[in-house]
Length: 443
Image (cartoon, rainbow, N blue to C red; front, side):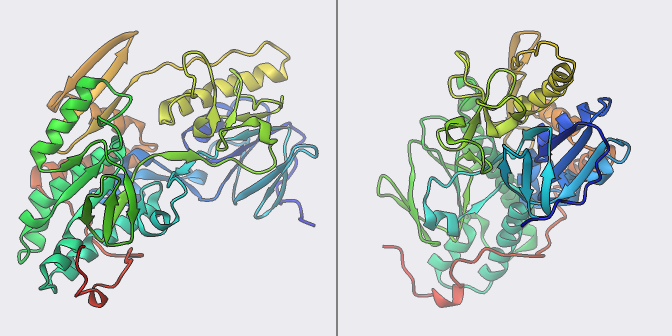
């Protein structure tokens, strides 16, 4: 029998939030003035700004620059209680959440557990590729990239050398495109100085996209311009290709083509991570909770889902809203208002997504942006889009100190052509030791 988690009862109604991503954080902040007890549960003790994980992975910024401890973030919010724990399941009859630290009672439950990397049930790729979903992933990728070049200095075999210096990125969305651009920056400005004995003309960066265009969801103009920028930087873009298998050394495409790399980065999409205990009828396609226009999970009046885990199916959005930060933030903000209305027995307000556009950066001075301002669409590419991208991401990072440190890091790198966080500290992804494969050949 699990014990109750040690969270004091305050005599007020409890709003339990599972997950401290964009949706959970926005909801928690917006409940500051409501006379309730807010309990935030997350498996980490910090919120990470995921859009900049690729910069941690490519030595641009420290992980602490994009992370904010929950206790610091909410240090002045007296009605909020944080617990670091894994949320395991929900008992909807008893209205309790089973966590790794015990049972937590709720009056209103909000599931904001976000999403996880979608490997499409390919166990081999799950084991051997590197995803880019959290700070641990970013640090593993950074360590692996740097470790690869340290090993490459000791290799005479050309094929083995290429396997260490070449990179394959799967997924042509913002993460894949931005990561490819950042690797090109390193190849051009940083690595040749650090590893003078290596010829970086031999470093190939491959970007594989299953569809006919990059940045699906953005305008055709942005997609085409992103492709042009990447090819200008020397990225080898493979459109209309799917990865069939990866054994840690050879990437096999569905066309039969093969690529050699010891490092494949998987950025080919995400899938929801629903918690156990919610009726199966409320789960859409097995991975996202189906919610109504008030973000109530279908079949429940006091259990909600917001952000990536929520699928609000409407005529405008037949597959739910895009699994991005803006819908999550807007849902969190409105749900706080609706919880107040619910407690006051007032009609709830339906959610309507205000699309503010999308953007992606492809290296120094190069970006694409599709913006929506006052219901008008604006599209720009190149230096102006890059400046807009920098501004939007800076103001979106939580914490003034983090905003300043990220800005200073960017300015230092921009004027000095140098990214200084090139430290190997922690895990390295090594599917097969180099010394055990010196005779391995590509078939």
